[in-house]
Image 1: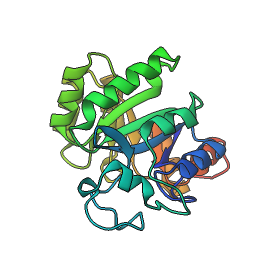
Image 2: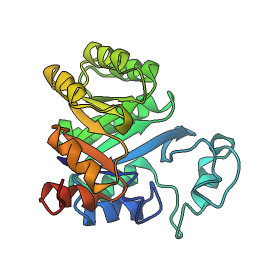
Image 3: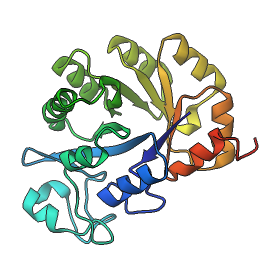
Amino acid sequence: MLSIGHRGAMGHAPENTLASFNQALALGAQAIELDVRCVDGRLLVFHDETLDRTTNGTGLLYAHSVTQLRRFDAGEGQPIPFLEEVCALVDRRAAINIELKDAASVPAVVALVVRCWQQGWAQNSLWLSCFSHEILQQIRACHATVPIGVLVEDRVGPAIELARQLRAVALHPSRKLVTRELVERAHHLNLAVYVYTVNEPEEIGRLRQWGVDGVFCNYPERVREVAAGLVVK
């Protein structure tokens, strides 16, 4: 089962920072998940619409220029990183799941993914995901084969239908939605199942027994420990 570091290793380091992604790699994550927003044409790795929770700034992210945003402390002295910086840090050592938080990111993210392929990244090591069905449709319209993961927190049926229509590679359901039957249904449609956000070893173990392909975890080492049989049931 794939260990996907949620916003890096946010249980250990400030989320969505280079320090967090580096920690995730050190803890054995086979993939990392991050969030992207487009400001001034640049791709910033950031989750919220506002700065208050994760930085020493305040107000809307989009109310600031990229130059201003890069001056804020995103935790332990870390700046808000550019997506290009994260790709350079990871450098094909792990897969990257890029969750798009706005429609403006679509062309720039797809272009970056294509550049990464040209630099030797495997096509299946970069996935684009989103909760918005409209943004996912824009991604597919922008590129015919870029790997897509459909995020879903409710209404599984429409999400699965969209995944089929877009030729997605994965379904990313909330942990609250997952059943053995859902995993079997997704696999029947050749969809991998990556579940968010699962931190308790017992639950990770149960999902593994159900055949889940990977979990997003704030503590990536826990997934590896379960897979290695270090956690019972």
